[in-house]
Image 1 (cartoon, rainbow, N blue to C red):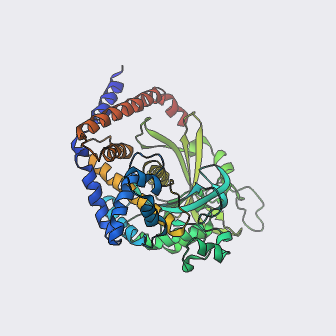
Image 2: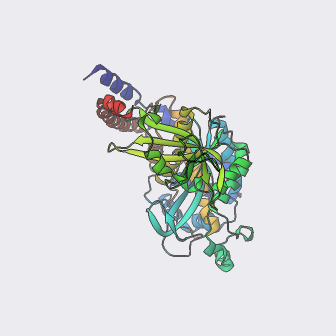
Image 3: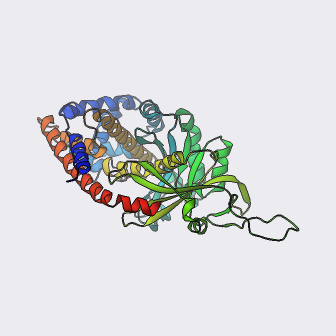
Length: 469
């Protein structure tokens, strides 16, 4: 084996030793974590909060009130009432979560990221359910849609707030809304962008940040971008590939010297990008990755884009990032920003990649903390479950940050798996050292898989770099 490959393998394996201290008092730490949030509830609800969050972090396949109650040998009615019909407010718990995230992750260069996420549902009785685009299924189907706010800093990322989107067919049917417990003041139609702005106005001042980011569903709205400009927010938002722009720095078509000065025509951004010469792109190594350095091609231009009403909007910065896929092809991503022209390419690439972190947050919540495993129909039940799931995710993130002091390669799934083993054995004695040994073996297998993918990728790195340049 070549020396550079051998060195990388040794580095990865050296990070995989997990000390038993990491899991020694994990259960008491979970209870201590829940205590401040439980103080916002009535006394009889406190134990239900502990039980439900522990159940979300357990090894149950379906993490809902019924299965969690059976796991801890309780009657399901009490936990179901706590989750679905009890009148406790979820907002005070989120008000405690945000300062904790700010204290642990707060950075002046952090990014606030908005992303809608859909939950497929059967029937029509659940709050907000309707036939609408479901990204999880890749088609229009019956689902609920939540708008999530994520906080992405250089150290970690976490979800901090959410809103439930109510389609017009719901807000136009007041009786239907009241049947599922939607508060009267909430029965009004608001677009997904309006819900995102509500969260920005509420949480933005509490969380230090330099950028606002979002996917192309958020960026396609020129109204949303103008609202961010009015709020003095610096944004980098993805836009669809058919967005029409006018390049203010491109060559102007030749024409007559009489009359109005000639300008470049508007064209779709995907057509414009593919017509660029090779020398227009700049190669940039964004960050190290488990499969080798993350290399992208990037270009920026001053442009004008058409608004939602077909008018010409203000000058913006167009950023196009081209990244390599698993099959060797290149994927184009398009962004519009109101950042100064002098903004460095590496900073624009950092923010663009931070936009994808909220997808990791949502996947983490669904796979590790039951974010999508609920079985509730009411407004209160949906918000209760989402809040408790966000708290469970935040506990895992905090424990991972602590665990990295001992094992730099430790991950959120590994912390959750270790905690699940302890919760499963809570009725009897458990052995943190055995959990640590199993965690070490799991990390070693993961590290070796990462290493062989990285090795295979880097064998071809000189050729790829030559092609990019």
